[in-house]
Every structure is written in C-alpha cells, then in structure tokens.
Image (cartoon, rainbow, N blue to C red; front, side, top):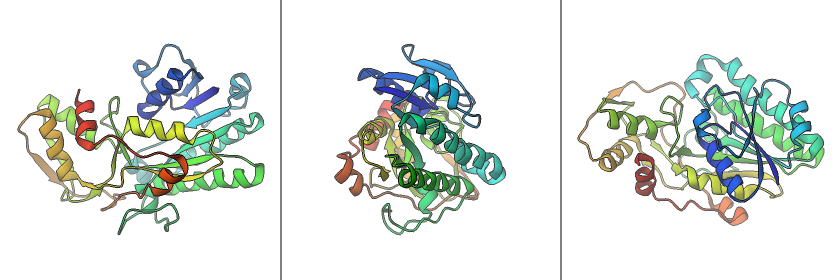
Length: 296
C-alpha cells in the first residue's frame, strides 16, 4: 500500500519506514528535520520536507496515501510546560492538519500517543478505559489529539487508531529528547561521563523496545479503530535501569541525583491485554536484550 510516515526521519519513524519498505509498501517520509536525521533515512523511501503545522492537502493529493503513520510530534514534557502553545500547535493543530489532509483519500491514521503522560500516576498497570489524568501540557495535547481521531471516526466513518506508547527505547534514539533516558545513559557511559538521575530514582516506567513498537504499528494497520496501549506491562525503576545499562556497557560508573522535574509521574506502567486480544500483539524483547541491541 501507499504509506505516509510523518516524522519518518526520527527515532521510531525511521524504524517504521524500514519495516514498511521491507514488506513491499510504497513509503513517503514527511519530516521537517527539526529532530529527525537524514542519516536515518532509507534511500528507497520518497522524502518530503514539510512541517505538519502547515497545510498538507497538496502534498497528500500528490501522495494519495492509504495509511498515514503519524509520528511527528513535540515530544518533550519540559518543553510543553515551558511552551504550551507551541506544544499544542504541533501535537493538536498539526494532528488536525494530518487528519484533514488524509480524509479525502480515505486514509487510515495510526497515531502515536502516550501512556504515561495521559494516565498520570498509576496504582496498577493502566488500562485504556482508566481515568485520564495528564500532569503536563504534552499529555493533555496528546489526549486532545486522540479525541479528534475518535470524533473523526464517528463523524466521517474513519478507522483511525491511537497507540499509547510506554517509554520507547532502542537504536537511533537521541539522548536529548524526552523519554530518551536509555539513550542518555548509554551515551554517557560510552563517553565516560557522569549520569544524572532526576528525583530519587525509584520512579518506575514501562520500557518497550522500538522493534516491538514497530510490530504494534503494523498490527494496527487495517484495524477498525480505537485506542491501544503499547508497552510491556512490566515496570522498572530508573535506578534499576541505570544498573542494567551499566551492566550491558561493562563499565563502573555512579550516578548523581538532581531534583525531580515538573510534570514527571512517579509510577507508569501499561496493561496491554486489550492490545494482545484485539491486535494480536505483545512485546517480545526482554529489557536486557533490548539494552544489548541498543548498546551495540
């Protein structure tokens, strides 16, 4: 099929592009290269340099996509706290641009949402129908974009899917971006630099390998629509993650602690039973193996 991948030069996007091409799809990358890197690009994909905050109608009329994997985003919680208008422009209005450009072509959207930033603090693994309690403008914007997808499904008979990602990690992740704690740890361990952990390090996250996330994206293509968690169902503390990274790196290093950051939740883990039941997907890569692949 003809697929457009917004943010296709980014961390997750470039892996999705590779997987779509590997199965024989015609793939168009749409990226403004604010954070995406040209070295991530697969040479057999068509590349369109474009900002999703600008109208996409003419570009999509040229591409005529059948599916749009919408990964372009402002993904930093801190930035969303400091610049909430910018965050909403990218994550809400940008998503609306993509939705409206895709609609005349009957294209399905697979939207990258967020688990931890939408559910807020978790007393147990969060389910899709749990109360949504975002603690940052980023989570609120992603939730707002999800609601637009759901409205477009009802209003226009769409089959758009929102995937609520846990903390995705793996090769090509930039250490400067939110959610890139694994990339930060391995980059600094490789360089022999110090590591800083915000808070006491006992906050927990659900770390899911990017290869598994790509499989979830592919599993969602053609589904009738809805919201699905994409994680492992297992929580790992930041302190334990650092120890695991240090072990795979084979280096002796310590970590300093700094005050917790505003907008960060203390516990975040996702229940993926609906995703397994309806999409036939479950993560397959244990954390130790994913870290080994990332370090390599």
